[in-house]
Image 1 (cartoon, rainbow, N blue to C red):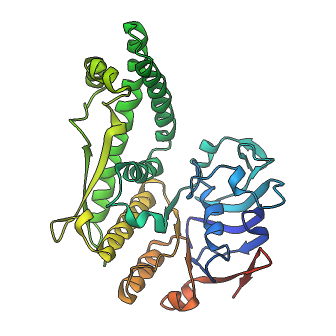
Image 2 (image 1 turned 90 degrees about the vertical axis):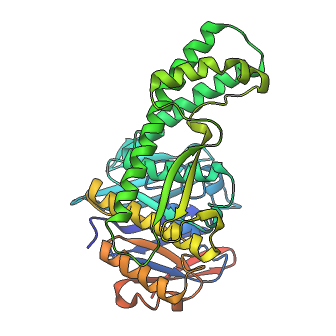
Image 3 (image 1 turned 90 degrees about the horizontal axis):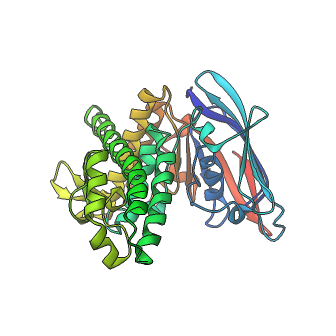
Length: 367
C-alpha cells in the first residue's frame, strides 16, 4: 500500500459536484465517464492537497458551483508517512481558500510537509512546442515538489521584479531605489536558479537509474537571451549593468524569469519540439514518472499522481507499461478516461469510479 494516499475524499459545491464522496484504499483510482461529467474536477480537488493554485491555476471563486455560488469545501483523510491527517480546504463567497489540518488552521505551505502531488493534464501536451512560460511553470512545479521553499522565493522574486519594472516604466533614475530592489531580486533569483538546477539533476538521475518503457529526456536549463548569472553577486551586478537597456524597454531583461527548459529525446538525439505528438506525450509521462521516483526517495513516499486523460496519444502497449510502472512505484494515481476499456490493463490493481452528469449535477458511482 502507498505511503501517501487519500482514503476519503468529499466535495461540497465544488465545480459541478454538489456533493461527492469517494472512499479509497491506496490503489490507483480509475475515473471514467463522458466528457463534461466532472472527472477533471475530482482531480482538481485532489490537487489542492498541495501548495499552489491547483492543476487549473484557478481562483477560489472559479471553483465554486454555479449558480448557487455559496462557496465550496473539499475534505480528505490523508495517510502520509505512517500518520493520518484530516484535511479541510474551503472558500466562502469567493475569498481566498482556507486550510485546516487536524482541526487547526494552517497555511498552504504546511501541506508541503505532509503531501506531494504531481499532475499531467492535456494542456501540457503542447509543452514542447509552445512558449517558454509554460515550460517554466512545468519546471517550477517539479522543483516545488523537491523544495517547498521554492514557492516563497518565487513570490519574493516576482514582487521585487514588479516594483523594479514599475520604476523602469516610469523612467525613474534613482540608483538607490534600483540597488535595493536588485539586492532582493539577486537573492531570490539565485535561489530560484539553484533550486531548478538541483531539481533537474534529481530528475536526470531518476531517469538514468530506471528501466522503463518510456523514453529518456535530456534536459537543460537555458536562457531565452544571454546567460544566467550563477551567483547572487553576479546576478546583482548583471541587473545593475542592465539598467540602461531595461529602461529602454520598460522591463527587466536579466534573471530566472527569462529561463527556458530545453528537452531532447535522448535515444534519437531529436529536440522534443521536433518529435511526434506521441513521442512528446511519452517524454512528458517519462518526466512525471521520474519526478515520482525521485520524490519516493526524497520525501519517503511516492506522490499522489493526477493523470487527466492519460491514455490520449498512448498506444495500448505504452498504456499497459504506464500502469505497470504506477503500481510498481506504489503510487495512488487518480486517472481519468472516457470509458472503462482504457483501464482494462489495470484489472483488480485499481479502484473504479463511474462519473455521470444529470441536470447539471455530477454523480459518482463506485464500480
